[in-house]
Length: 228
Ligand code: SF4
Image 1 (cartoon, rainbow, N blue to C red):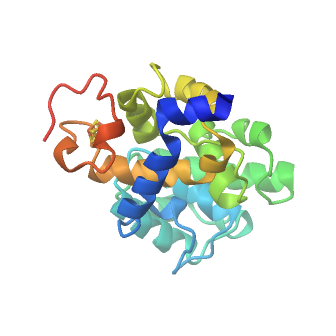
Image 2 (cartoon, helix red, strand yellow; image 1 turned 180 degrees about the vertical axis):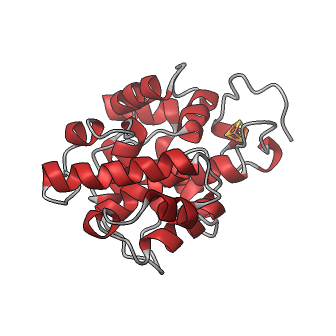
């Protein structure tokens, strides 16, 4: 049996991705992961800023704040002259809005000073920017630069593969490393938005909706103690 067939038999990637694609197609996905942006220009910079706004913040709040800020100030050049207080007012009530306003201003300055006003199309360089961790850098690579060779792992993308029994990990970083070795690359570009949406609607952190879950029969339900 080939390695690919063995992986397919063990993890049921094909079946699970097909079922999730079908079931999640009508669900609203977070702004950064959407293919088409309606009210603001989608660029690596706007994806980066929206991702920073989204940390510890509900999707609806992030979306409204992103639109208020980025429909006018969608480049580092436009943001750099904006007083920090004005950025705060535009992004309020996102979580940690004061810190994020400061960070956004600093980021714009760094991009202008070190990268000619552009977001670097380079994962390692993204990681050197203040306030940009692996998740944000991966999101900018996938959704800002359409680069399918990255796996952004948030809390849902970490929790669900553990419940399914695909990985056994303690941190999102470990999950990213293990998924890189077992998940065939053709699924990478769909992984984040499918699993985030699935985690927000069905495989929720507390008491997941296992009785109506489309992939129930493929799930080992590791560490799932209560469910609906
Ligand atoms: S069966 Fe339950 S734990 Fe498993 S993926 Fe579905 S909702 Fe999540």
